Image (cartoon, rainbow, N blue to C red; front, side, top):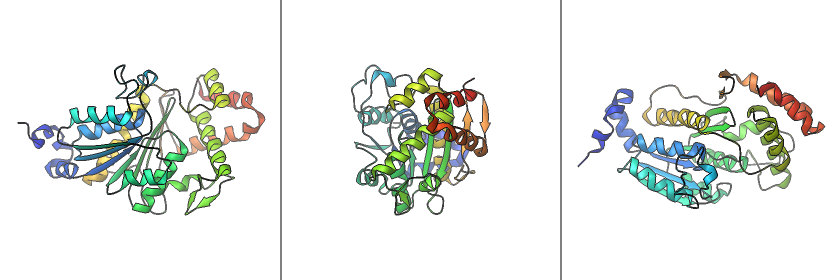
Length: 301
């Protein structure tokens, strides 16, 4: 019979036997089991985390195969948490995997996900769910690891409870109504303002092909155009910081520092670079989609 420490032995050089024991006793949650969330959950399982709780509201479709780790032709139509739980157990027979289906923009669902856990990895792809996860993590004093990819771009940071919680990044957005230090996502005008800001970031950072950026801006679909390499890169950044937190080794990339890498340009960008792109899009936003695309073409080489 294979023993836990035997299976995990090749990681000892990174954090030692004691560090591995910490991972064995750790409880980690993953919100969203799409591109970022699925590979995060898989890497956490492979790392030997003893308890992993996952939540997503959707089922896999064939369109997810190009990016999402648990999406195959066989899992089309299967709930993401069902497919993910089954596959994660194959990679870590020692782990307790707890998966449930729910909408993480609902506070009760988000609270159920983070209850009693040590670290959350947020892999959700919409502002309302990420905001709610940030809110419950702040309430429960839980670090929230955010990894994301928008088209060609990778973004990553960690929000520790306190001054720099997830609500912090919305403070310069106009038109928001606030509740308990966070934008009130139940207020229609706030949701509209948040979606506008989300779309500005997509236009500024995605480097989508112009026709598809136009499609996104006109139709505002619930999905993004993506490929697996950016998602796997972003998830790796997030999981490594989650492991650092759990074993107490290494420097964590924590907010207000944000890791941003443009994979199309092969360039690590600063917060100033990101802010300049966002400001350029904001300046022309109300002038129409053609103007937004004209400015965004500066980064779609």
